[in-house]
Image 1 (tube, rainbow, N blue to C red):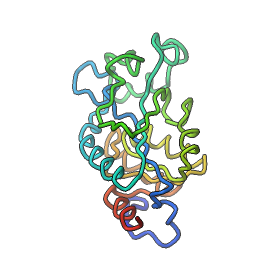
Image 2 (image 1 turned 60 degrees about the vertical axis):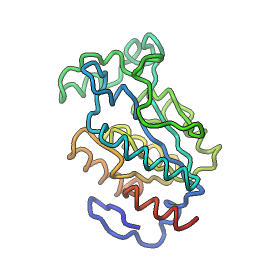
Image 3 (image 1 turned 180 degrees about the vertical axis):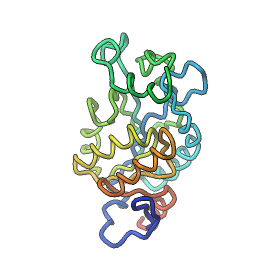
Image 4 (image 1 turned 90 degrees about the vertical axis):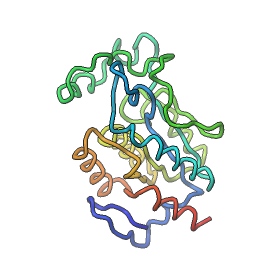
Length: 225
């Protein structure tokens, strides 16, 4: 299988079979909801580069379901009133990210329970699983994602969604620290910008897991059925 090692595309040697075993894998799709993807001025935490991967992610998920790989959708959800964040101890990004992108007009509304901002943009099928309640950068922190994966006997997590240099990178670190095999789909993640995305993927490839493209992984899954 072809993978990206510090940005260079090359053949993986023998010994990475546990990263490409469909029967022990699950897809974890992160934060593909309106709070990041809405194309309106009131989007509370816009990640505009991720809009371009909605359709490709849907297509990949459909192909993965056809070979029996489960899809888990993770979304950020904060309790009404913001006690988990803005009315408690606010997340650091609320202060630091605007230093780069400028003031975010509706950021206090981000991920509030019951709001339109928690609605998925990517397709969620009846057989898919949902982890709602992500409250910080990692989908493992303060959620039951690890519990769910272990109940499913999953050993490899395949990450897509946004943002590469933020929640995807945090997910990769936590998954690796929890002894999962990590695969990040280079063509199905988007970061703050191309430089940050590239840096995050290079870190993953050196320290946390395998960076590859969706079609490469699908080919491996299909060939081993």
